[in-house]
Image (cartoon, rainbow, N blue to C red; front, side, top):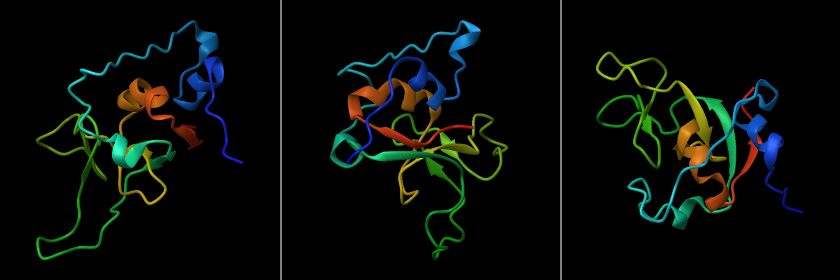
Length: 123
């Protein structure tokens, strides 16, 4: 049986929000959102896990795999904050195989639209 996506305060906790603090989880996305580029083909209904970033691919001719990008907004994920990108994320949501990474904001914005289940919530 497939787990059901959380709603309300449960959903807010999945993303690390404390509903008791009076904060509000606002989802802002639409069909014309610039971040949507056909991810529906490979990210619909997948389980997501909050993880610290680590290379999901072996080193190649170009050297070690040192970063990934959010599947939506292209923010960097890496094992440290890159000197040329202070917005680099060192943790985020990823698919079971850690091939696709999604930043917290994009995960919040597209959670319902893509039917994701957060299998490993943010602590």
